[in-house]
Amino acid sequence: MLGKLKNDPWGSFENFINDSDVEKFVGKNFNKYKETWTKIYEKNNSHKRMKNKAWHEKTFGMSFSWLAFLLWFGWFGYRKMFKGFILTSAILFSVLIFEIISGIDLGTGPYTAAFLSIAIYAKSIYLDHTIKKLAEIKSMAPQDKEFFIHKHGGTSLLNLFAYTIYFLGSFSLFLFITYQIALATGIGANFWDLN
Image 1 (cartoon, rainbow, N blue to C red):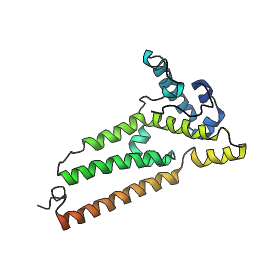
Image 2: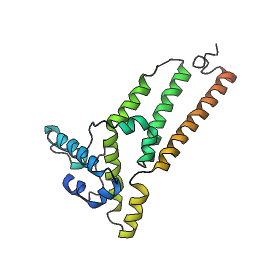
Image 3: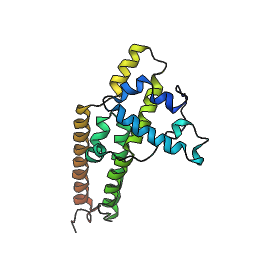
């Protein structure tokens, strides 16, 4: 998932996971994440097909997160991952646009799959985010590092609520607009049962 790092300041998973900046970045649940990330890395590292890969290419795997499952979009906000929020929102809006335009009802399948995928891969997604963000700070001055870690790391209840409200507001506006388009043009009328 991560691919090649342009600059690998750690050189190994062990150096990364034991870096004090990683603990500061993750925050209060660091030991749980450390345990999960280590299991994922060790499992991937034991596969023959992964032997020639860099350590940071061996960090993607499954580990269910109830918090990500229950909070979904809010979880991305809680962990300060704006790109993940935008990507999953775009995917779900794309599925909904397809349903509206095509008139094909996909049911709850795609949405359930998205919820489960996020929950199953949440800890790996967060590890990827952590590696990328912390690779940026290795050449910074100590005071700049601390500010960066505070701004991009840890958790934020405010972001949890903000991302959730933003998504629900965007989703409501999207539905309102598509309903108005269906009324005016007939596009998506099947979706809204306007026929």
